[in-house]
Image (cartoon, rainbow, N blue to C red; front, side):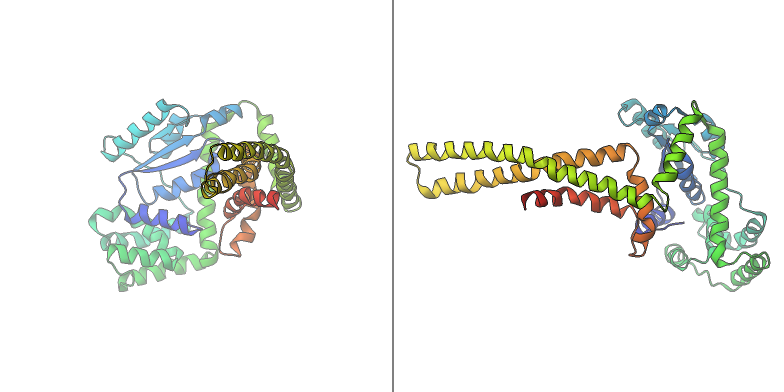
Length: 363
């Protein structure tokens, strides 16, 4: 269920690019959200390796993940990684190679949707399987689901990449029969996707309940209470503006002092350089190029840009480490979608203020 252009590109490559192995990265601190992507990918390909990253961060939050049980429930290899530990990355690479070379055979456990949707998939799947190329027969269930969903973009991609026509008469009759069953059970085009997504979410919740344990339940409750405040409709945006405003103020105001010190230092050095070039009787054009040109330009750039950047980006990194940046993206996602973008774009826009703040200091 792609929601952005980059997700569509990734989906199309997994579907039609024949990757040897698809690696899905999960955040150990919020696995339930990431598992949705795993189940959607397993519908497309069975050659999947699940990488549970940030195990060190989950340990700090007293979150334990049973990787072996997770692998058993998903039916694909699961590897835990910590980016700073090379041994964990070597194990991930080794698992990828084994899956790509078929030394590990994956048998994914797919999501079972509600009885009505499963019935409709079973109506379409035999016809779809006959139409697909022999080496793509495993995609018949996923293609059947897309036919029921009726998303024109992906259906046209399926036809183009597999050189088939989904308008074949017998298949159209089966699709009409399936759609009639959906309509009889009050599942129309508008709520079909919601019904599918809810099944995936429930499956993800069930797996997380089985593989995740919390040493301190109070930590989880505390995080949930914080989330309710930071992502609430009432307080989310004002708190975001407060944090960003504070960062900009600290950057612009705080940068004045080191900028002044740098300026005085480089001014002192420039004066000594001019005296030196006069002492060696250097021509004015050479002094102008080396001192008034090259040295003074570097001095201005360092004096003006280095201090605010050295303040802004570490402060922004602290917000990222605290997990606040994804919450900013969540709060702004609805607004950015109106401009055909996503809330994640807000983060790159904020990063751009690192240089803008330097310009404010200069003015």
